[in-house]
Length: 160
Image 1 (cartoon, helix red, strand yellow):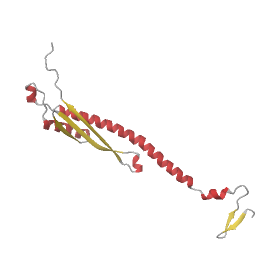
Image 2 (image 1 turned 90 degrees about the vertical axis):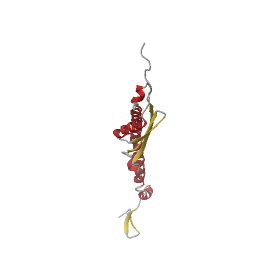
Image 3 (image 1 turned 120 degrees about the horizontal axis):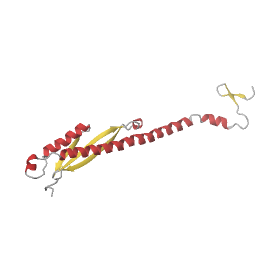
Image 4 (image 1 turned 60 degrees about the vertical axis):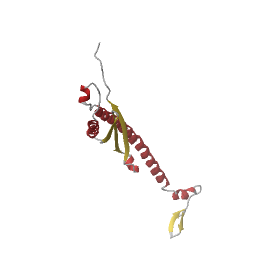
């Protein structure tokens, strides 16, 4: 039984051969690579989440801007029939706000609308659920947009 010796607790343990003194030290470090790999994997998932969910957030932001712009245009289309008959372009405040809010509701993200001095302003806010960032505790990202619209008078004189 050359190369074997008794250690504490009456266990046999192999003596390292000459030139293999670091073998015992390496045995004490077993599992350290597992912790490193686990940290690297968490970092890679976080980076993947930023790419995927960040791209979705940018896309959702653009969609929210388009939705707010369209809602503001819908509100700005609430013209006063009496004003048109008298040759002026005026908006009906309540109808403009109601039309703008109705558009946001129909689009799936209810928003708010205001009107001042003939300008309709629409605010859309919602949270976009994440796909990958939920792994690191971020379940949703905020999305918001604001847009204004005004109805302009078209051709006021007849064609020559």
